[in-house]
Length: 328
Image 1 (spheres, helix red, strand yellow):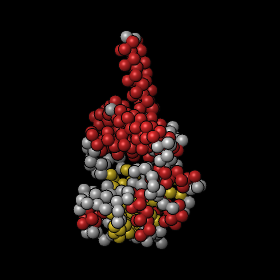
Image 2 (cartoon, one colour; image 1 turned 30 degrees about the vertical axis):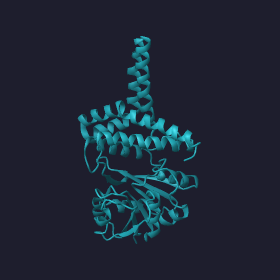
Image 3 (cartoon, one colour; image 1 turned 90 degrees about the vertical axis):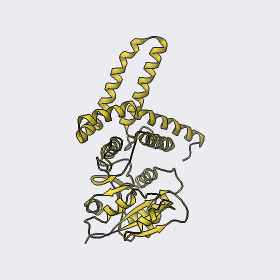
Image 4 (cartoon, helix red, strand yellow; image 1 turned 60 degrees about the vertical axis):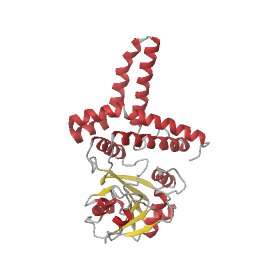
């Protein structure tokens, strides 16, 4: 007998995407599921869209963030299995079936999926981000965290865990939740076949803002958690080396010009080559997913532009950590 799955979706001003997300959810071929949508005091008309679908609707009384919304959704869920996604995620027809199979007999584990390599909006910056996340999150079958854009967990385990921290950073509550469960002896398992298609709508500016914001909060959390150098999903060692390489090249160029020691520039090709070698898996994914033209552009963006936003975010995160006295 199939276990009932409760899809839990937090929504805050998601009018542009929540309709597509719900259409996909209700197109699932899995025989026994429900959809629980928790609205976090939206003001954009998304509530009217949600109420067009036969889902369980929960309306928070004050704007409180995604963690409280997800916890509220779990409390109102009737399924044995909770499947957390976001309001801009598109389930595939077979996603729930794959999730049920992966979590079978898994009261002691949390199962994760990831984004499809090609996003819903197949533009350069959105596709760059989707491939980057897909590659980073599926490198390890026992990952450092399970993201809430595709998190599958037994409802009893979730309730026992206390749920997501509602007094935390604006993001990364799934990372903190994953680390807390792992410290308690539970397993984290990545199932690359569990896929959701994400709607990014990224432009150049949005891509860099996202990189800055994620890096800032991730650095703040990692410093407090004492795991800055951990190979952790999108906060991968490759990305950290990529940022270090970018700034090392910048320092070499500036110092050689100031000191008139142009011979120092001979080290640049070696630094760049080492960085490309260490990031070869991601770079190959760029090429294999979208071809050579995209691969060249994505590689150049990854090594020559993206690190600036990630590095600036890391510096901002260090400042936030020091200013807070090491608390998050």
